[in-house]
Length: 321
Image 1 (cartoon, one colour):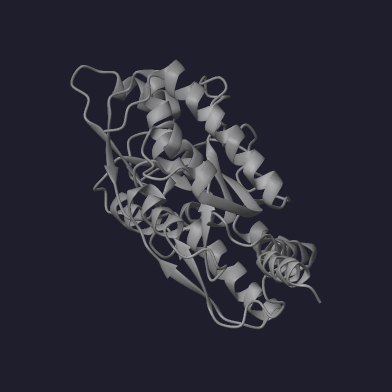
Image 2: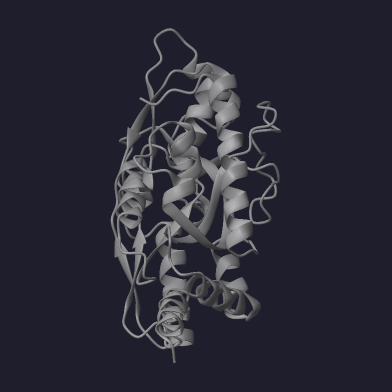
């Protein structure tokens, strides 16, 4: 073989090696799943369910690691900086897009992340302590717009859908509400039940049992449809805040530049899990609506959420306190 042919063969070999897909045995070691909130909330519960299911399906442990803070951004920022080998992923949500619209992200979600699959969505619920003097949305608005008003609402952190529900409520009603952030839904619920804060636009997955147990009182739902479990509870849209529609939509994400076949393997595994009987039953227990879609659909959804919040921020002059 001539020198030229040898060189050509060598170059072709290098190019081919660079184009090889990820190892067929992925994963061959444990995979971390970051969660941006404290244990107990919907993000954490969904992450643990899918981690268990992925462990069964792919034969390696998927280990949930809670990294609460900054409305989920601590976990996602850490994810964006990890090695893109498929061994660190996260249970993210649409706060990735809303935080970008609010100029809170230290990363570029469009360039630094790889969406894997859509999981589920939930509305939030406006809840107050059981002994609260408020029994309707209108009563809160009237109290919140008085000159001497000082009402507080809790959240799972700045930029979370729970927080943004409160900020949009303030912008649309003129109510003077002070935001009190916590590192997750559970700590905020403890504070609410203790009467340390006046209200919360909480996650349905954890608020419903507390309302049913009489530990909290529900006044409204933040989605556009009433919940089957509370058919007599109005939506905020029905309560006079036309177009009010804020909730949490969950998805698995990875760092940018994870090999396509690893993303595809994870996405296909999630699709298989969702096609089984356990996933729909579990999401229903969390009062969530299953979402379907792989990397392309998840990225398109994030982009639509970014555009939605960009518009809402501008139209309602949303500000973070």
